[in-house]
Image 1 (tube, rainbow, N blue to C red):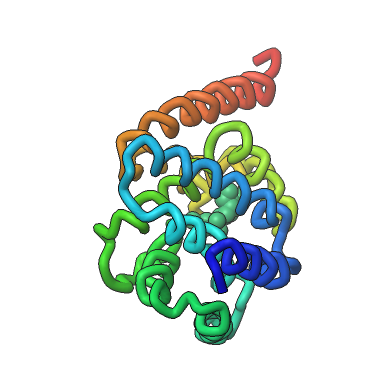
Image 2: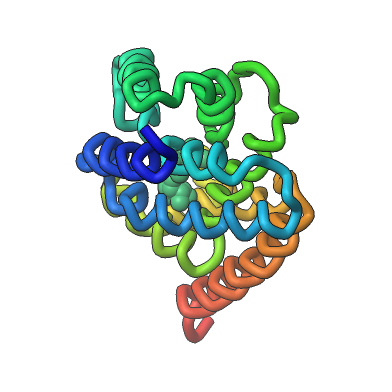
Length: 208
Ligand code: ADP
Ligand code: NI
């Protein structure tokens, strides 16, 4: 298979694998992360663009949230796909990056200083902040039927809420960026989160 066909086979595999996910993890998320990853990589030239494209496309296909009891099964399906598409040369590097990309994944799965992981993780995190990040957070909260805001528990420590998720995760992402370009973009998007929260609390407290 040539590279163009490998990309198109990977796109088809991803669309099929993520079809049951919530709309914060749909094909549009993959497209946005793809653009962000390409942009960061063009600015900093850290990794081979083809490898990056494959890693971005596949990065959510074995997500533990959507392969509930059987995440290993998700990785097995991914490995089989990469084999069948002639991508076995990239398999270990791509799977290592995917295993490490998640914020919620605190377990160590190998090399965390890999430039592929650095770019992929920055791009994925950028899609969780800014206006898109706000939209995704409220969409996910609705999907889980979580409250918007629990005033007694701002950080959402005991009662999950979407505003709580801002303090638990979203406001921290700016400090966790790996690349210079990612950091610059994250700072811009962080301002959007802060403006949104200021307006949210002001409306919540209306007249007080
Ligand atoms: P990661 O891939 O880093 O593990 P997730 O898959 O947990 O991230 O999150 C995907 C999207 O869903 C992000 O936009 C994130 O902010 C949002 N999200 C995750 N958990 C929550 C939550 N408890 N409340 C609101 N949004 C959430
Ligand atoms: Ni993602």
